[in-house]
Image 1: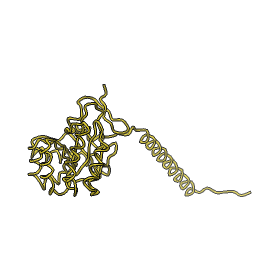
Image 2: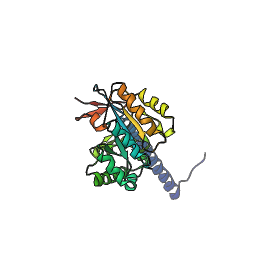
Image 3: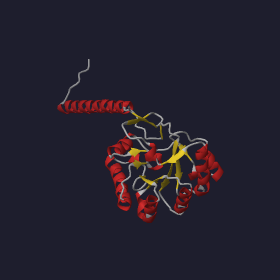
Image 4: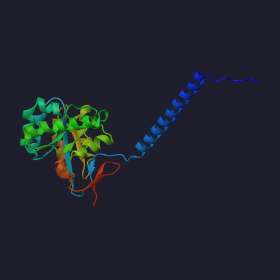
Length: 255
């Protein structure tokens, strides 16, 4: 028969290992609970389109870099008496303040596209808030009106981003029809991308710096109108009141 002598050092080592094991178990349980809670949290979805029976569609442009085509787009919109929503990055506002004023002066709405065009989910809640507020302040300083709409750069969002936008009293807006102008399709293909997919309450995505957007815009406007839709601002597409978005991002009034 073998006997084991437990020295003071051995007892200390055993106790230490026991404490470490207990801590690891607590951390594992905590991580599991957190993961379950996260998985159980309902997914927050921005507004991709609006449930409506008013035969209305909204056109939007994201502006993050150059402004070479902005005036052409504004002239085309004027020609067709159509108003659009321009989502501007704060850095773009800094570089092209006269364009910001011109967009507003021609009756178009200006939305917030962040201050520096980051991937918002990679930021802390405080950083997300700062990105939005700084851009809001820049736009308001030039136009006198703070934006009520926010579109996340790259269309990249998570629950925290959507909730941060809502906490600032703004709508988080995506799109359900992508012109794919950023891929430089032909004007005809771009028009087909849009006109074939628009439906009542749709929000169309385009960019102010894409190569063929000015050439495609007249046909897109005519095609949408030929389908019986009026083209309105996104803010006019969204009715006031308590709302929710379904899993596909369709806006519905709660009552």
